[in-house]
Amino acid sequence: MPRVLVVNPGSTSTKIAVFDDRQPLFVTDIAHDLHQLRQFPTVMDQFDFRRQLVLQELAARGVPLQFDAVIGRGGLARPVKSGTYPVTPAMIAEERACEHQHACDLGCIIAYTIAREIPGCQALIADPGTTDELAPEARISGSPLLPRICIWHALNQKAIARRYAREHGTRYEDLRLIICHLGGGISIAAHDHGQAIDANNALDGEGPFSPERAGSLPAAALIRLCFSGQLTEAELLKRVAGRAGLTEHLGTNNMQEVVRRIEGGDDHARLIVDAMVWHTAKAIVSEAAVLCGPPDAIILTGGMAHADYVVSRLKRRIGWLAPVAVYPGQDEMLALAENALTALKRHTHTDRTAG
Image (cartoon, rainbow, N blue to C red):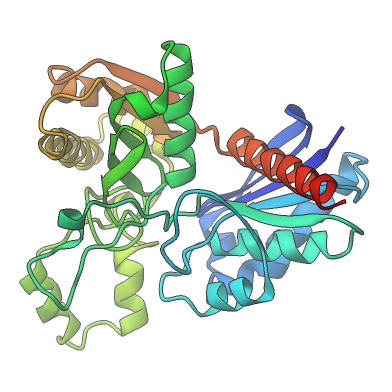
């Protein structure tokens, strides 16, 4: 029975799981305090910290370093097609040097450094955030200098789409869906018969604001701020991704805390969250134009889908367009494990054929 270690570094936590075939031995989510992460100047500086967390968790649970594959959440180095990829030194070099830095970039590096210590173990990634299936029209912006790119929750959106299809007796490739991942960033994509033909750059440039991201900003005002001398380039980039959105407005990215403040009578917190819902709903509904009509369903997923305050208000604004399905959290760990198992079977079949 193949054993797979799954490592999924996110902006606010590190998720770890071990699967024996498709059965989870354990799945855990280690949350990181914002102040804890701010001691690291860059995301790459978090590598040793996060890798040690993984090794310590395995040791604490008595799980030996004996795996057939270690699969990490893919990074943001370059646009790729949906699929599973082996981690190579060249991939790691690209991740270290890529323009867009996110904790997910550490996934392939952690997977590689653990797998290389285990004889015969494969290091893999699957459906990274730069998975690109955009229609040609979706790539065009108002300036040839600034083409649109997508950086989105491809892994979870694809996994949830397939789960929804299975539960409704059909195939992902036969559906038209609008999927919204409500996490530290908010990604919204139009899925047309198995292809995400439109998706936003949910990391640092487009879409609704979120717990940690500024989303789309007024362009002229942003340019003037850039040349005002008030902030350095690094500080400005943090105000776009990381120290932005709810974090900038309310001093926290914790939705449970924000909801408690609203329930306690904090009108400013209520206004900010209601504005986030407003812009998210507007972006969701706009994807119907991409699909040339109502989708078969709108799916809400991600960590914030646990928050009834957010989900109920989103449903009120988008429910008229199509049925709304809610899948709180994410299926990323199982999706990664299944991708690794498929790759292992393919590798075994290739070896047998070659033999």
